[in-house]
Image 1: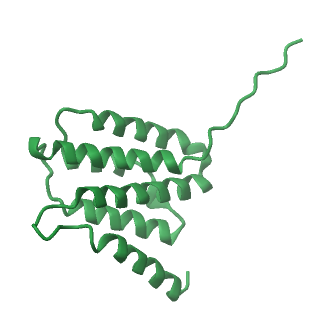
Image 2 (image 1 turned 180 degrees about the vertical axis):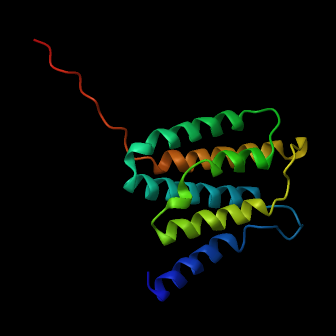
Length: 151
């Protein structure tokens, strides 16, 4: 990857991540953070599965687990991050995808709420749902298996 391409990817990342952190009132901008997480999940999923299509099931399972977390009455950020860390996206061959994933992880980790917090459950549910949305959007179409012809 050329230096100019890396700089372009970093610039896009800064545009996405820059305004996300806190609002002027000091509160986290949850919808923007969720959008960044969704985009990173979509990029990571599609890039990884483009070269490893046989591992599609891992991503489908992860999306389903995130949907379960999305409905959990109590949720911690560590639970979400631990589940996402199980995916093999660190093995991505695309520099752009690795930058997107790591940037989103840094941004989300900055929330610094490892324990379940009733006040933040709705925000964490939104985040879990956004990541699941991204994974699902990045999934290639399921292979169609036709039944064997009968005689």
